[in-house]
Amino acid sequence: MSATRTIHFTLNGDPVTAQIGTHQHLVEVLQAQGLTGARESCAQGLCGCCTVLVNDVAVSGCLYLAAFADGADVRTIEYAPAGKLDVVQEAFIECGAFQCGYCTPGFILMTRQLLDAHPDPSEDDIRHYLSGNLCRCAAYPEIIKAVKLAAVKRRG
Image (cartoon, rainbow, N blue to C red; front, top):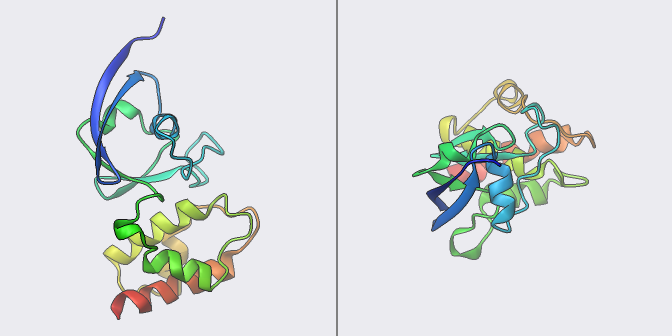
């Protein structure tokens, strides 16, 4: 029988209490909360599909133990202040920066983090920063365009 514990964290702005197995990863806990944007794909932290932000730092939800989220601020692709898309999401739609959409949440969260750190990234910066996210449909040219457009939109 696996040990369990109770954790408390903020999820997309709302307080959450969850009973977790000590072995559970964050992506499993998020899915139990009804959030399916972060998806486990490779289970090795190599593809970026399970990306979530914990205290504003991108983590691989398939590797990040849920116990470490205790007391943290967790944000997923479902986070939408005022119920609106943000400029990164708008840019991805405008540029058609997705095909199947499986990887899109991870790319969007990584783009948000990139633009927070580097408001005017070069194409090399973008490629380097997003290198941990894989798109099996090969929408990379559109993703690069979307990141550039989001940077312009953020700067106003």
